Length: 506
Image: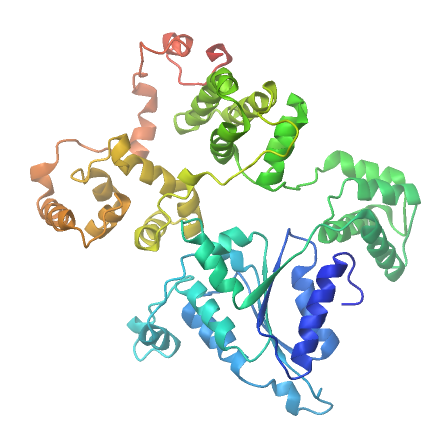
């Protein structure tokens, strides 16, 4: 830990917490969440602690199964016992076992508990079919249980704590439940002074030399990511040899571009205050949200940032941006992402802010939280992921919001229309979940009966022949372009028979 640079106050708090464990009087909060951007040393810190103090470490990372049974078997049980290192030759008197759960914000699902019977059956299956827990099922609930019962220090790393709490309306309750047993310590990007020290230490250790101006140029393009700094030095040394000069750094900068993302709240705040269309576009393109998501964030936060008159002036640009993004579903006009991101950014700096003297109040769009309930998502997302071959995260992020919109009653969703559920191979319960209808409701039984009847006699209720997606794609050239006489902006596109999003639309 002594070799770590930056975040001094955070490291001091962690040392005090570890000292409590070493003294034999564990702190009230048995866990610590190390949150912050990638590359600032969160995982390295956990390993450094174990190495420095001679403690054993149990590690569970995002590439492994982290359902309730996996965490129970690996982490929870390991947290109940003394370290084996305590009994070895030269053992440390106050030896502990550190439980490291890496990237806990990538744990999917909610905090609903899994029955003890299912957990034990998965850990020690009597028959193969009893190994029923897959993926991250019950992982968050078991994490909470681990924090309550552990007799060993638990370190968790995450980039975005909000992903751990969940997007649903219960995120505050979930946060409070976790923080009752764990402390959240926020790590920040380090400054140039700390990066300079690390760079000199690496150069000395590798018997390399570097011109001061070359080092400053290397640091100039780094947002405070220590991991990226090490890789940059490695790349420069591979090209230059024993001495790195400014020419090598500049040549590397010409052929590579730093992949640094900006947190969405910071990106929006900087965009609204920039007053520059060029700077707004740069900030938006470097944000950690794609244009589809950013337009939702703009649509929501513009209402609190601008007066009504300003909102009406930029509504046309927002509408065109939305239309541009929609074209990716009909063709391969990837430039639609350019217009879908550039137009909202230009709109955001074209009008005066409601209160230019203070920071704008920004909030998570409420309509993006829709459909986060565990009873709606878990079964359907697992079924869709298995059917499509995509990951559950991809289904949840990309497909799920669109399916919810299709089934929204305010947008014409009809619970008695089973065509899409049948097409996707979903069950009746999944169809109810998409419409947000719990099985306990009176109408649910009627819908399920009708669904099962259509499943048994599909030919009686089928009125439309659905061609496979591949057939539809193959017949695109023969299909007549759709027209909409009420849309003046798309007239040029319609006359040419093209579905391409064109500049003439503006």
